[in-house]
Structure formats: C-alpha cells, structure tokens
Length: 279
Image (cartoon, rainbow, N blue to C red; front, top):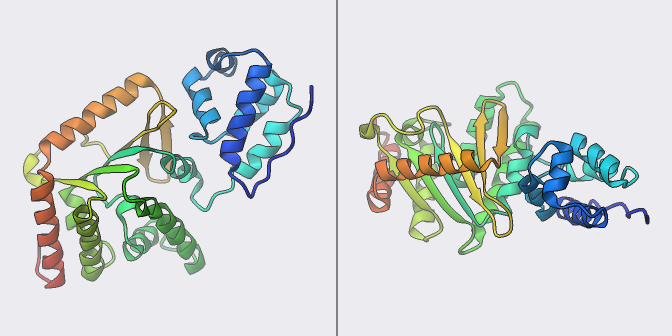
C-alpha cells in the first residue's frame, strides 16, 4: 500500500486528517460503524473525525495506524492537528464550534465566550489564573477574541443564547467593563446576529441548575453537546444525551424572557452600570 504523505501543518490539519482517515477506511473496506467498533467508539464519532468536526486524539491515532496499516501516519500528523492557542481542555470545542451551523448555549454564571468583549475576557481569565504572567493572559484573550470573529459572518452560525440573570449582575472586571459587555450583547441582538434571552431570577428553579451547556449542529455531521467545569470540558455525541440536553435548552428558553424583554433588561442593566447605580 502506498504510504500517505505527511500533512502540511500550515493548512487545515484537522480536515486533512479527516479526509485521509476516510480514504484509509474505505481502502480497508470498513464502514464507519465497523471501524468504530474496533476502536470502541461510535460510528458517528468516526464520521465526525472524517468531517473535520472533531479533533483526533493521540491514542485514537495510534489505533488507526494499527487497524488501517498506515505506517504511523496518523500518529505523526496528529501532533500537527493538536497545536492550538486555546487551553487543552477547550481546544477541541473551540475548533468544533467554528464548523457549526447552529450554536445554542446557556450561560449560568458568566457571559459565554462568543459574546464576550476583550476587557470582559481579560477579567475572566485573570480570575481563573491570578498568578499567570501578563503575556499568558494576553494570549488567552487573543484566542477568545479570535473565536468571536465567527460572528463577523452576517448569518452563520445561528447563535442562540439563554443568559442567566446572574451573568448580567455579577460585576466582572468593574462596572465599566460590564456596561461595555452588555452594550456589546445588545448591539449583536439589534444587528440580528444573535438571539439572546435572559433567564430572570424570578423564574426560580430551572432545568439547568447544575451548570452551563452548549449544543452544536453541523451540516454533515451529528450534533454535539459540550459540558464544561473548572479547567475541564468534554464533548458528547451520544444521541440520547444530545436529545436530553436539547430538551433542557428548550425548557430554559421557555422559562426565559422573550427576546424583546431580554434586550430591554440588558440595556437597562447596562445603563445602571454606566450611572454607577446598584442593580
């Protein structure tokens, strides 16, 4: 068998790895489900790797080389695909959301990354790592702002966010930072670039009391859900889990204020911050 050529890391290594995986699998006469069974993963996971929506991990790369007889190709090139400006636990989801056609998310305690301003992102990262060097904080903030450029496209991905009122009320950075952050969200809403609903304190108990969530849909791959905790995160493609989290998001949206009332509240709180009034 002809040995595959190593990938050019300056191109899109994740997509190229996926294309090579599909070619190698088809040469071996295996379906996605059959290859998945040999690696103890789902066929949909293999499909996501081939579509470039998931990052190939080193242990999977080594197993692909063994099962498909690719002479260490995937092990070598997996390293190029692993380079990222994002923290290790978040790198895969940051790359994955760039391929999504729709993103639905719930922000429990803070404004989600795609809606953040640079000043807000700096305050969040400094709180996460109070002893980090300024150079490191700058790198993290640059990575966060690079993610927000997804919204430069006028229509995609669809971004629908339910924000807990706590995320609007918790002063992160200072009051000027919060005023800017909320005006930025209001601007995205008014430009039709994001659907945002506020889940008010008055809603009481709700379906996601335990934390935030992110759901992502793709054009040619199954949907994913992302769960995040302090310094950790995981992507799930299990259909039952994804369906359950979609229902959870629908319950949150039903309990939240309408988009119109949410915009009014966001702008009201921004004005409170501007005038240094206690919300």
